[in-house]
Length: 288
Image (cartoon, rainbow, N blue to C red):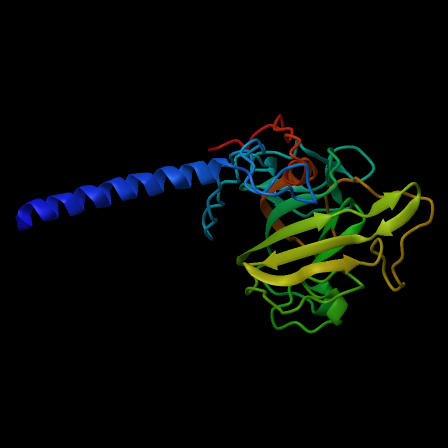
């Protein structure tokens, strides 16, 4: 008798579990109320799913990592075919042992122009320390060719705060100094949003988020205008700054660069907010 009761209880529990699972499936497929910020309802099964991206791999001191599968590779150690000297012509930077060495007299910029991006750059200061302040391992990463994130050997090297490594140059110092010793490879992971306009009127400035060596140093920081030296930054009137090249600065010091890639973000942002499927025709990262 007890055995029959146990079997009945087990059968009832099984039926209840199946019923609950079915109810959960139905609930998952049934859309909720309308979202006022989009054309979709809460848990709407008709909403397009995000594109699949294969994550990259981390770099080591000896070997650069692999970029995400949807990244545009700007420099992989082989050549500078994606770059030109600022203003045109062949870059004066040189490829030496799989790295791009900053060499003058000109900056180097991408041939392609970008707006909102995720940018990954790896760089290393000269192992032999020479100079001080701004004369020690000076270079820079320019977004849209206008907005500089400073590259500098700020490891035990005092300089003005808004010009040290990781600064929005001439505007905002980094939140912390996350520099490694000279000679070691370092990383910038940058999220950049270009200025917004209505007609010719600036409605929103550029913003930047920067992680140096995995440490947050600029947190959705407002950029006050294009970079300059010894002047207060501001946005030019009647000039719309929406796209531009990524540039690397030559400043007289032999800074090394490797593993540079970028992910354009605007199409992905549009899909996330409106459901309009992002353009995934960008050439995927080449895997080695």
